[in-house]
Length: 122
Image (cartoon, rainbow, N blue to C red; front, side, top):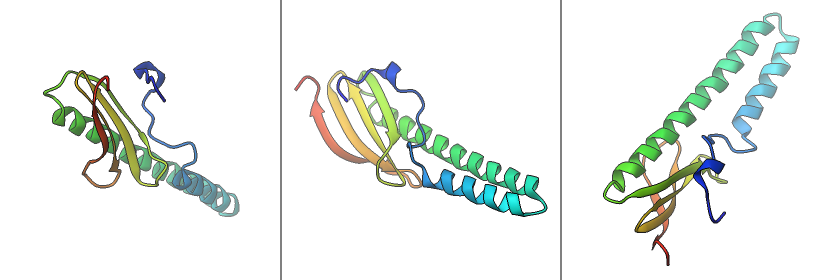
């Protein structure tokens, strides 16, 4: 993934295979097909998925804000956060004019874990 261009990655909050969304959709559709009040159940499933997406969005924005505040002494060139392969975590990359940082952060808790930190250009 080098070099990373900021325009190549938009606001990415769900991995390609998100079991929470798939499970909710399938459960909602199966129950909705065999239940009298199918519209209400399908609406409840859609609201659950919407709430989940809002939680992911807020978590991602909070992580990016925390990273920007932590490295505000540097000239930030790139802050890139994306869903981790591990469930319930964000991976991130932050690049400044002096340092490149790579790490992860839990989605449902605060805290940042730095995996690697090196000087830019090395």
